[in-house]
Amino acid sequence: MVATFIEELKNRGILKDGTNSRLIAMGAIAIHDGLLFGEVSGMSKHETRNAFADSIQAMFSGLIVSTNQT
Picture 1 (cartoon, helix red, strand yellow):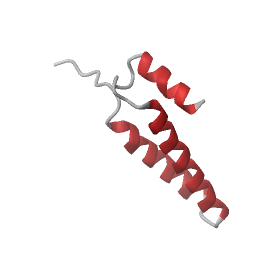
Picture 2 (tube, rainbow, N blue to C red):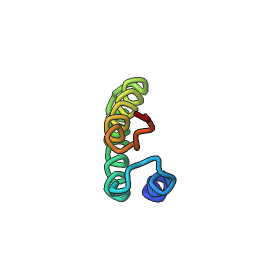
Picture 3 (cartoon, rainbow, N blue to C red):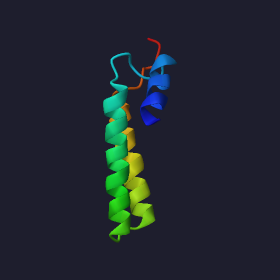
Picture 4 (cartoon, rainbow, N blue to C red):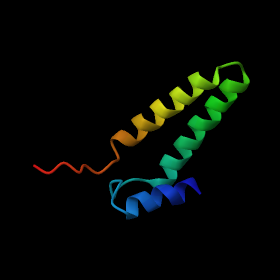
């Protein structure tokens, strides 16, 4: 389901054509699962949410199609 969503972003021109939807989805899920485990192990919800948001932002920062016109 995550890969399908990422593929849709690619089809809409939001993500670069060369984006491997399956690998990006696997990475996002792995980050989520790891942070969920961290939360169960004692990390605060605030800390895990911030870590997830920062990680996903870093993951997608190089994949987003630039909309800047020069």
